[in-house]
Length: 73
Picture (cartoon, rainbow, N blue to C red):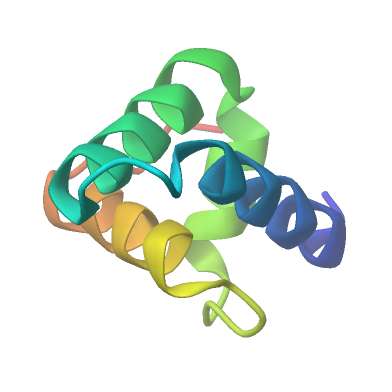
């Protein structure tokens, strides 16, 4: 998976949720990635260093890491 493209997609999702309070936005982004991204996509974004991610998507990806949501590939 192209990490730059996934970063772009995560940032777009972040823009959708940007009007919400931070905690709700992060939770919404995390839920979207968990429910709608292919396991390979999730694995690639979790394996990345987060470069280029805006603050809300970065926090959502970090929450995925912390909750042990690293998918099997």
